[in-house]
Length: 118
Image 1 (cartoon, rainbow, N blue to C red):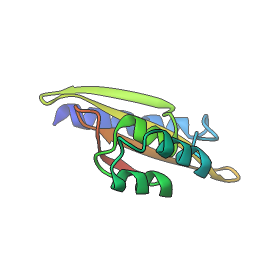
Image 2: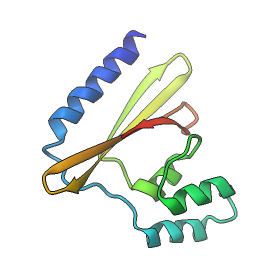
Image 3: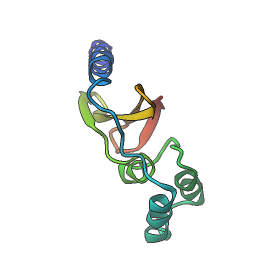
Image 4: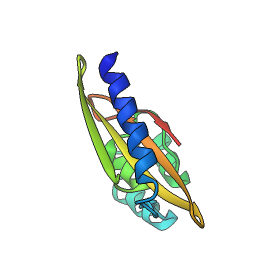
């Protein structure tokens, strides 16, 4: 519990400080997402193909599938828990003018998305 609180605190501070530093995320275009689906069509489930095509995340996606949707993270954090090493990705994107938004994606010890915050 203490580790999770420390990680959450770190993420909050990082997001507040970093919003001014990162102006544009690496969000994938529709064409880039379609190319990823075509290249991996035999290994992707229909549900994952649909999510990537629509540019959305779903629980259970792999890191590569998340990258196909929203690109590489600007920051990666790792926390060792009783279950193993869990990873958190932080991405920033400009929504309009000087307004910024961020997305935090959490992965389990098997490298699959458990949840995200936008």
